[in-house]
Amino acid sequence: MDVFIPESAPFTAEQRAWLNGFVAGMLGMERALASAPASSPASIAAVTGTAEEELPWHDPTLALDERMKLAVGRAYPLRLMAAMGQLDCGQCGYECRSYAGAIADGSEADLGKCVPGGRETTKKVKEIVALARVTDAPGASVATPAPARGPVERGYGRDAPVGARLLSSSALSAAEADKETRHVVIDVSESGLRYDPGDSLGIWPQNNPDEVELLIAILRARGSEAVTLADGAVITARDALTRECDLRVPSESLYALLAREAKDEADRTRLDRLARDDGQAEALGVHDVLDTLLEFSSARPKIGEFVSALGRMQPRMYSLASSLRKHPGEAHLTVSVLRYERNDRTYQGAGSSFLGEHLRPGRHLSVFVQRSHGFRLPADPEANVIMVGPGTGIAPFRAFLEEREATASRGRNWLFFGNQRREVDFLYRDELEELATRRVLTRMDLAFSREQTSKVYVQHKMLEAAQELWRWLSNGAYLYVCGDAKRMAGDVDVALKQVAATEGGMDAAGAKRYFADLAKAGRYQRDVY
Ligand SMILES: Cc1cc2nc3c(=O)[nH]c(=O)nc-3n(C[C@H](O)[C@H](O)[C@H](O)COP(=O)(O)OP(=O)(O)OC[C@H]3O[C@@H](n4cnc5c(N)ncnc54)[C@H](O)[C@@H]3O)c2cc1C
Ligand SMILES: NC(=O)c1ccc[n+]([C@@H]2O[C@H](COP(=O)([O-])OP(=O)(O)OC[C@H]3O[C@@H](n4cnc5c(N)ncnc54)[C@H](OP(=O)(O)O)[C@@H]3O)[C@@H](O)[C@H]2O)c1
Image (cartoon, rainbow, N blue to C red):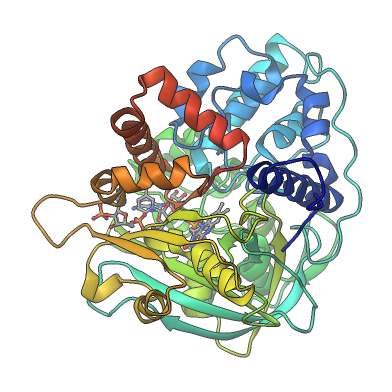
C-alpha cells in the first residue's frame, strides 16, 4: 500500500484515506508526465488557456456532432480538441487537448493519429485545419506554443516501444459465441517493463500477411523492392506494408496517386472526386486500401509510390488484465477480435486480429506501457471498490482483483459483469467464481443480455441492487467503469444518477453534482473506449 499521510497526522481515517489517494494520484500523474511531457495538464492549459471544467465536449460518450456543437465559437485549438475521441488514452502520444494544441501550433503535422476517433475524427480535424487556414492563421489563437516533447523513457510511450514475445493467445469465448474474445499473454520480462493495474499496453500491430501478399500481387510487384519511409529509413515494400502502413483507411494521397495512374477515364474522374472528398467512398464499396485496388482496376502504381501514399500505422491500446505481483514478467490482455462483413468481404481489425490470430506464440512484437491518467485502485487497502465492466471491460478488474488479493487488501470488492450469454462468453468464469468462493470477490452481479427476450444489462443489475449500491457509495466505496464508451458508459452513468435520486433523495442537479464531486475526489473513475 502507498501511505503518504502518517497515522499521527491530524486527520480522520477517511480523510487520511482520501489524502493518500490524492497524493498517490498526483505521483502517478508525475510519472506519466515524465514519460509524456507534452500531455501534461499544465502544458495543455498553456496551449489552450482553458480549465477542464470549461471543456463540456470532453466526454467520450458524446457523438462527434454533439461535441462539435458544444465547441462552436471556441478557439481554434479547442475546436480541434472537440473533434478528438475524448479518451485521453495516449495512443497518439498526447492527450486530446495537447494533440489539438500541437496541431494548432504546427508542431504536429500528422492529422490522423486519433485511432479511437477513427476516420470521422481525421476528416473533421482536416476540415477544421483547412477552415482555419482561410479564416484565422493556425497558431494565432494559441496562447503559447505546445512545449517540445522531451525524450520518452523506453517502453513508456508510442515512440519508444520495446520488444516483447507472445506467450499464448487462447479463446475466452466458446466457438458458438457471436464475438470472439481471447486471453493474450505477453512476455515482457526481457524489457523489464513495469506497470500498475489500471495501465494499458500499447501494441504496434502488423497487418494480415495474406492481405499484404495480395496487395503485392495486385501491383505485380515482388515485395522485395526497397522503399524509403518518411523518416528516410529504407526497408522492403513487404516490411513497409506489414508494419508501417495503415491498410484500413485509404488516404487522400492514395486516391490522388491512383487518379494520376488510372488508365480508365471513369476511374480517374471518380478517384479525383474521392481525393477531394471521400464521403462517397462507402457507397462505392470502398472501405479499405485493398478495396481501392479492387474497385479501380485501371490504376496500378509502382509499389514504392503506393507505399508512400498510404497513411501511417498507429498503435492500439489494451487494458492490462494482470497484476505483476501475480504474473511477474507478463502482461495479460483481454482482446475482442474485431471481424465484420461488408461488400461481400470479411474485414478484420488490425490490432485485435494481429493479437488474436496472426501473431504466433513465440514471435516478437513491439509494445509500450501507457500509464493511466487516474484509473487506479484506492491507496487505502481497506476501501471498498465497485467495478462495472461488461465485455472486455472486465480486463482491468481482473488486474484489480489479482492486486487486491496479492496485497491482502481487506476492502470489499463488488463486480458487475455482463456479456451476451453465460454459456459462451462469461469471460474468466472459473477464475471469478473461484475468487468469489475465496471471498476476494465479495459480490458478483451478472447481466447476460441475450438470454431472454428483452435486454438485461449491467445497469439493470445496478438498479436492482440500488439500496446496497447506495450504501456502499455512502460509506466511501470507489466506483470504476470500464468498457464501451459510446453506449454502456453513458447508460451506466444515467443509472447511477437514478440510484442517487431514489436512494439518496436527490434531484437531477443534485445527482449530477454528487457524481461530479465523486469523480473529482477520485472515487468515480472511468476507463472507456
Ligand atoms: C485505453 C484503451 C483501452 C482499451 N482496452 C481494450 C481491451 O482491453 N480489449 C479490447 O478488445 N479492446 C480494447 N481497446 C480497444 C482497442 O484499442 C482497439 O480499438 C480494438 O481492438 C479495435 O482495434 P483493431 O485494430 O482491431 O481495429 P481497427 O483496425 O482499428 O478497426 C476499427 C475500425 O473498423 C471500423 N469498423 C468496426 N466495426 C465496423 C463495422 N461493423 N462496420 C464498418 N466498419 C467497422 C471502424 O472504422 C473502426 O474505427 C481499448 C482502447 C483504449 C483506447
Ligand atoms: N460503439 C459501438 O457501437 C460498439 C459496438 C460493439 C462493440 N464495440 C466495441 O467493441 C469492443 C469489444 O466489445 P466487448 O466485447 O467489450 O463487448 P460489448 O460489445 O461492449 O458488449 C458487452 C455486453 O454489453 C452489452 N451492452 C450493449 N449495449 C449496452 C449498454 N448500452 N449498456 C450496457 N451494456 C450494454 C452487450 O449486449 P448486447 O450486445 O446484447 O447488446 C453485451 O452483453 C469494445 O471496444 C467496444 O467499445 C463498440
